[in-house]
Image (cartoon, rainbow over all chains, first blue to last red; front, side, top):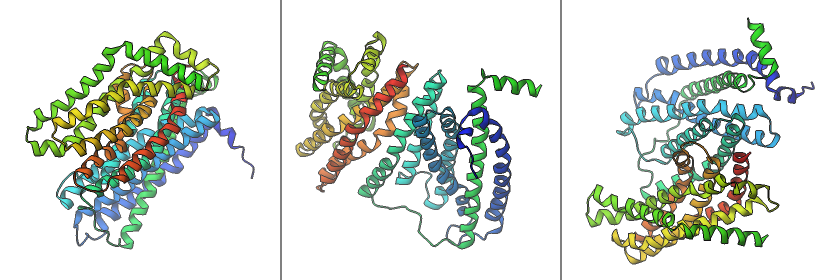
Length: 245
Length: 222
């Protein structure tokens, strides 16, 4: 099998491919999410320690994972875009950002809702929470910079550089916040590290896969819009719109 | 190589010192921000003593943030920056000289005024010295990281607010270790670790950020 990968680095040939790929990710995402939510919210028994509130974990943990993975993916595409100067890579980075920010916000929100009944407070300045909050600010910074620059080429390259600088800083921020917290008050409130039941772990895995598939599908959809927007003066886009008529 | 560094440094320092108002403005801003806190939280000496290091650090951080927009804007408007980019000298070195000059005219004055602020908050002399030392290592990191933000937002509408959004998250580690060193010194703990980490951050920022700033400037100019 000898696929010419670079063929799909061109927006014109990636656009129809992305269109064909979306259902292959979107449909399993919906199926898995429905299965995971039904199992997690209705079928699994309540936790003996936390009662019903632990069910938030099935949304919370996949969201937190995705928020970090997507930032790294964004930085990855930004680096590829810098090295090969390919337009599509920077469009991918741009398309990923809103999904990452949404997952980051979702992780914070569900964490707060879970924290109230479990820890007795919506928010603590715990290392993970603080890092997640700063990550959200970094997503906002990325999107704000992209939105503030009118020239799409400069917008893509400037925000790409910011994503890379940010990716270097995420581990530094994570460890500094962790040390800051442990230095000051020790881990006073952390979730008890109990062995997770196998049924719970498998539901969480289902939800995590659903979150991955959803992110890919949504990103492909968004990159298609981005391609049309950026290439609107290209001949093939004009052909596409006349075909549609 | 060194000649261009000296030339740029001398130029920037001359320009910086001729605009005395800019230098003093940053300094006063820091003092004013630090003076607002006792008015807001109440004048109890014990409370102020515990909060002092953190507040002075945040005030210094905001003050250096305020001065970042000036770093490239004047050269950008009159076209000097373009000449710097197309010159045969490495842009990273020119940028480095500019950042050093920027730190000497904004960061260093903040370091020098900090003992006065430490006195206001009733910090012990020894802790005040630790504060000065953390600021001495920490403020150059703020200038270096901030330069990346300043270069990326060059010539944009609302650049000042945007810089804050971009670089404040990156300032977090510096703030944490800077303020924590003073707190731990006050509690009688070992503080070498904080200084090692701040030093490590300074060295990595010295090595990496000039390149990042240079490429950000190239992106912004073209």
